[in-house]
Length: 502
Image (cartoon, rainbow, N blue to C red; front, side, top):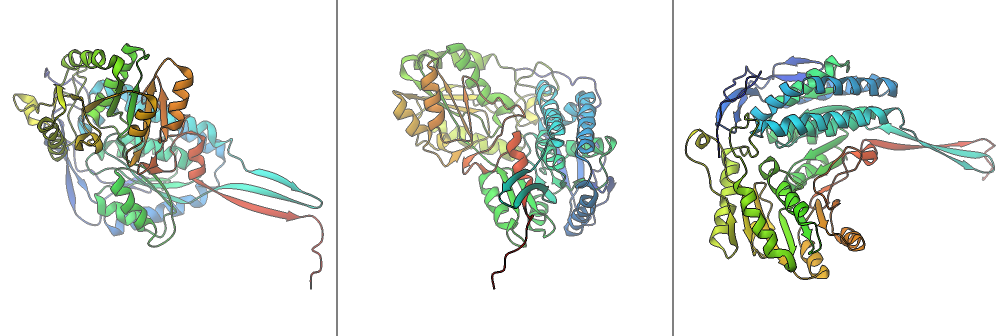
C-alpha cells in the first residue's frame, strides 16, 4: 500500500469547483428548484462542489428544448450528423488527460484507468456511430403484380438517458452516440454521485457544432430520473443501473405514454475455468474480472468456477498477486486500486466481507478496510478473495459491486453449467479452455448476453452489450443499438387500380 501526493494537472486530490449548473439548449442555466446537493471526492470524502438539482420545471425546459431541436436534427443529413460526432470524439481525445483527472476526482478510480479507458472508449463509440450514421437505411420489397413496399428507419424523438456512477462519461457516450447518429435528441441525467464529466461532454458537443437542444444535461437524484421517465414528451428511456431501479423506471415509463426502454442492469457473472486452460491467462482474467475499477463493474466475473484438477494450483497463485497490488491515491499513476464510490457503498461492501468472514468460505487474502493515514479519510478496501465457496452463500449469490472474488470448485461440464445459470442475473460470463468444441458448447449454454472465450470484459463498440433475465432489456453498442433508437415505418405503394369490392 502507498499514498503519494497528487500529480500536477488541472485537477488534483484537493480540487474544489464552483457551483455546477444545468446545461440546457446549448448553454448553462440555473435550476429553478434552488435546491443543491454535494458531490464528494471518494478518496478523501471531502466536498468537491455543490450541484444544482433539476426540478419539474427544469425537466420540462430540457424536454421542450430537445423537442424543438428534434424538428431540425432529425432532418439533418446523416453525413453532417456523423461529422459532428467525429469532431466531438477528436476533442475528447485531445482533452483526454484533463477529463481523466476530473473523472478520477469524481469517481475515485485510478488515473491510469481513466486515462486509458473511460474517455478513450467513449470516443471510440462516437467514432463508430459517426461512421454508421450515413449507412442507416430501410428496405424495399417488390409485391407483384403492381405494388411494392418500403420500410423506413426513423428516429424516435426525445430520448432520456439515465447514467450510472461507475463509468459516467463513457456511459453518456454509449447512449448519446447511437441516439444522436439516428437523429434523436437527448436529455441526460448522470448519477448524482458522479455528475461532473457529463457537463464537460455537453460543452464538447457544443464546440463540435451540435445544435442547441440536441444534448441536454439535467442533474439530480432519483426524483429527477422519475420526472424524465414519466414525462409525456420523452419517447425512450435508457438506463444503466441496478435491477430494482430498472423495474421502477419501467413502471414509470408506462405512466403517461408507452415508451421504448433499454436497460443495462446488474450481474453476478460466472467465469468458468477448465483444467486444460492456460493457467496464466486464467489467473490474469480472474483478477481483472474482479478488481478493475475496485470491482465496481456490472459485468464482472465474481463467481470464479475452477475445475478440481487445477483448483489448488489456481488458488495458490491468487494470494501473491493480490498482495502485490498497489492501493492508494487515485492520482498516483502507480495506483492499481482506488477508492469505492461512497462511504455508504463501502459500508455495504464491508457487510458482505464480514458475512464471508463469519461463514465457512476460506479467506485467502484481503478484505481489510483501510483506516490509518491519508487513505483512512477515503473509501478504501483491500481486494478480497474467498475459496471453497458454496453457491448458497449470500456473498456468492448477491451482487456486491466491490472487490470481492468467490472461487468455487467444480467437477464436470454439466454440473458447472447448471450452477453457473442458477442466478436471476444474466449479464455476462466466460469460459477458459483450450478445447474449442467445449468452449462453444459452454458459451452457447451460459444464460447471458455476453460470453467471452479465453478473455474477459472485452467490449469494443462494434459488439452489442446487454443482459438476459434481470440484467436488462435491449442492447447497447453494435449495429443492434440502432434498432433500439429507431422505429420502422412501412409504406405500401399500389401502382395499379383499387378493385371494386362493394
